Length: 178
Image 1 (cartoon, rainbow, N blue to C red):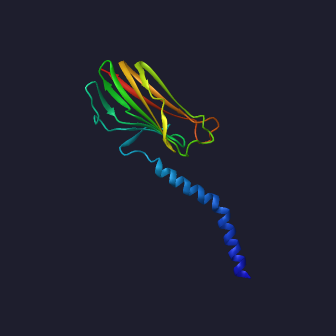
Image 2: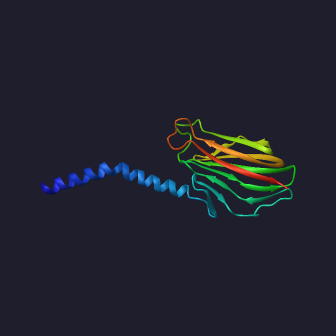
Image 3: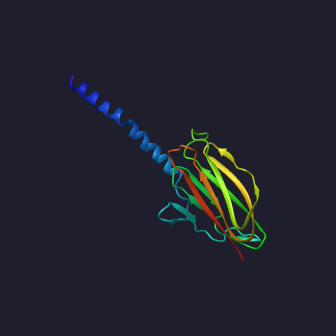
């Protein structure tokens, strides 16, 4: 009788802790998927924004990539923009790749998410494919900008309305003309 009581108590404790165990496993799984990319460094301590420090790996006759990627991961999802910093000649056309890595498969219950792009200074958007889901957890958008003078491209990923996992991720692409 005592063994049966002990077994019931142990089973009750395991069942009571099951949600915590599942949450811990889910956290480990998502942490492995959203680990910072190799060669990244934290730029701001107030907000977790990371920027790759690889230099001059991509060049063309009209622009040179100074920083390969900028990453924002303040909430559950991750925004990655490539390249992060470019030095270009006037009139250069620069392809920009925007990726959103979702923690949860899409579509999710908060499916009103959006990716907004704002060009400022002498930078204007000349081509935008609008983006598409390339997998259950990955959105990719390709943009081409033209740089007549130095400026910035601010990319903002807005979580869906009511999403408890975050509000926005934001990355700024610096384009210097010289």
